Length: 108
Image (cartoon, rainbow, N blue to C red; front, side):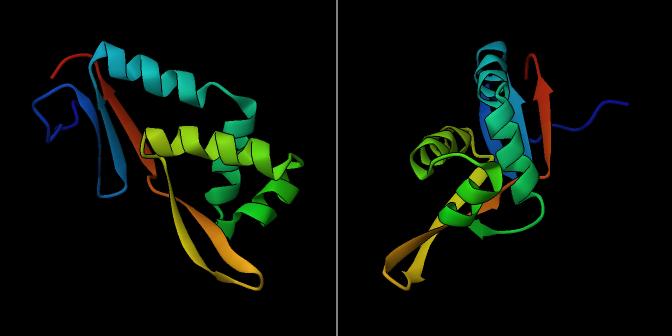
């Protein structure tokens, strides 16, 4: 049974916690971003709920700098959303999963 795709043009769209990826070029971009063990671990941790960058780096066992660059890639495709809140010393970057499902379609 085919899922109704609410978009008519190729691209990457997020709506109602679903990421719609339409067109071969966009599918390749999303697949490339998701094809990393570190990034899939990030998604796994964020699936448990919102967390800050420091805590995420500790849970995954990677440096904040590396996790930050991985987050930028996940943000570029709309899978992760970041926000900034006041922290003990400056601003704290909070991260959350933006989608629960990814649907890919080769053509609109």
